[in-house]
Every structure is written in C-alpha cells, then in structure tokens.
Length: 294
Image 1 (cartoon, rainbow, N blue to C red):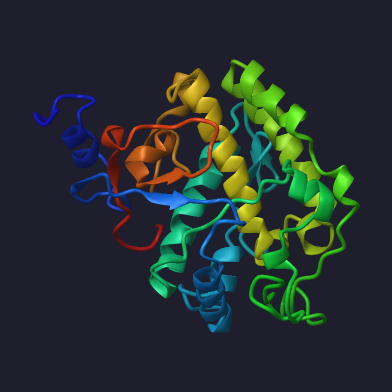
Image 2: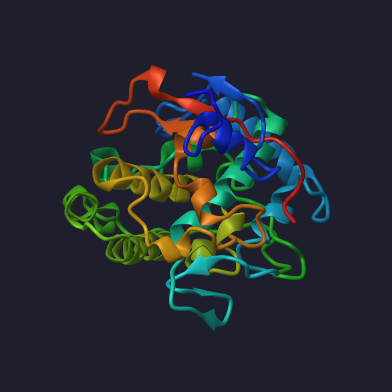
C-alpha cells in the first residue's frame, strides 16, 4: 500500500517518532544471528571502541549501561520501574526499545556489529554454559567483561561472572511451552521474565544485580534472546496481541511508545535461524535514525 491510509507503510512512517522515522526501505533488514553465527570480530571491535570511551560520552559503554541500573534505574521489570509499581507491565517493549538504541551505537562503531542472541536452551549452552566468544581471551577482553563506573565500584573496575553448572540453564522444553502455549501477553511476559531472571541469576556476579548487569557484555545477547522469544510468540499469537491500554504508553526515557516497537519488521531487523521463516518480500523496514533519546 502506498496511499498513506491507516496501517499502510506510509502511514507508519509519517506517524513514527523521529527516532525511527526515515523512508521505507524495501528488504533492508538487519539480521540478528545466534552468537555462534554472528560477526564476532565486528562485535568485538565495536564493544572495544565503546568501552574505551569516557562515561559521559553518549557513544560509550558506561553511558548506555547506566540506563538500565546504576545510576538511572529506568529499566522495567515485573510491573515496575525503579521502586514504583504499576498495573501494567512494559518489560518486553521497554527492553526492545533499549536494544534498538544500543544497537544503533554499536553499528556506529562498526557497521557490521549487529547484536547477536545467546540461545541458553541449546545443546551447546547446556554442555558449555556461556558462549565461547564471551569467555575467551584476557579477563579485560571486550566480550568477556565491561567497565563499570568508579562511583558504582572501584575494585574490580570491570564486571565479573561466576556461572552455575550449564545443566542449570533453562531447558528448551520449558521455553517452548511458554512460547507455544501461553496465549495472553500478560501470562507470556510474566513467565518469560521469570526465565529471564533465572539466567541473570545463573551467570551471577554483576549479571545477578540490576544495578550492574548491563555493564556485562553478555547482558545484550541475553536480552536479544528474550526479544527473539517475544518475536516468536508474536508470530504464533499475533503482533497486536497485547492489551489496548498498553499501546500509547511511552517507554521512557526512549522517544517510543509500545505500539512503535510491536513489529520488528518495521524497526528494520529480524532474527536469523528462528523456528519460523518470513518471506523477504513481506518486510517493510524502517531504519533507525535521528537523535538521542529524550
């Protein structure tokens, strides 16, 4: 459709916030891949550049990690943000927006640094735990650890982990049941958050604390997995299968609402090696553009 009517591509673009408004780009979709198939050299390069920048720099690792926990505490978990509780749950849309903004920074550092997802249900994860790319090399390697602000902790100056046995990671059967059999957004989001929490607790160390988890490089691939599972659930149960009262809620501090982030095809990315295939000609991608979040 090209007439600007409600629901058409032109309508989507014209009504989008400045953070996602550009021309429609046919079949131009970033593919987020499993960490085992991702461009690890590009990701390493981007993370290294970001981690080398100072905390106040809006291209830096610490600047973006601070949105989640220390020192802003803007993240949504289980019906709440910070110390406030609400009668709605923006965990999934908030983190989708967060990943979008963070990925824009990684791509600015290296155009091939598309965020990968870590499948903690896979046989490889259940045999070895953390992805090899995130455990190899020196302790201060850009995928193995990330810098933390001195005000958060002076020693050690980088993130640490203490993972549990691989067999304690969530099973594929558990996750498949959540994706396949939960039909309401509230139930799905709540149970997926419980799995999400268990993986943070499995990694332990900084990943086990909201204040410091986003400073660990594995945080981003963990949340890409969560976002991918929401996408798979949407494919099965509907992109718009979400309470109408959620749609216009702003995902503060991002310049996006819930309805802005429901369809990843219009946000310009997809997930590779998923359980479903979407023909390329069905994609109408809106590439990220514009300034910093308000």
